[in-house]
Length: 187
Image 1: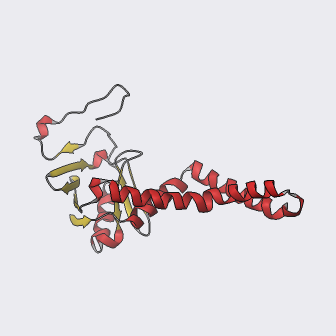
Image 2: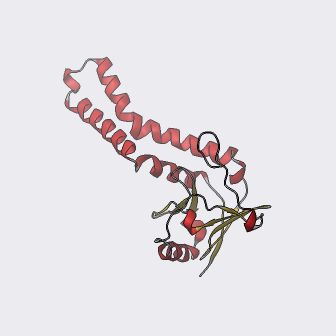
Image 3: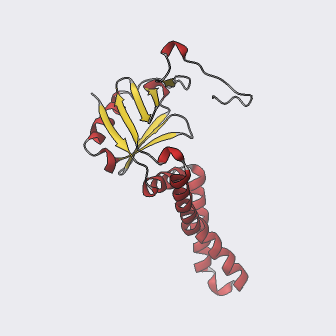
């Protein structure tokens, strides 16, 4: 089984990813609860609060429900506009070997053992290669390939994660090398 498709990152796709990524975490849920709590206090205590406290509660209520999503929208637009990777389509081939990504002369294979986790939403399939790095696959660009990708991911869910398995397709597999910098990060 194999899926071949091309993805051109859009601001909307990046925005949906960033928003979900931010609000699904414990800190994201906590932030929303803080904003909702401030809104409830604003409504319940409105008559007893001085104007400064009203303004502060309104600001806290809007912070994670209005301001932060607007900021994320701007961040998504900036990332898509300025990141050279998003300027051209990424060509994907997903099969039993892993996820192959090609753009121009660059070609990289992420074996299934290099997949940290996967998330499927109504609009996207997200394949994480680490806690902070992911391939964002918008379903509207995958079309009929989305079902094949989902089945491949499901068939590989028992593969043990090994963060040291990224293979550069441009190099001979015997030349694989993992370098650790002074901070313990992989390069």
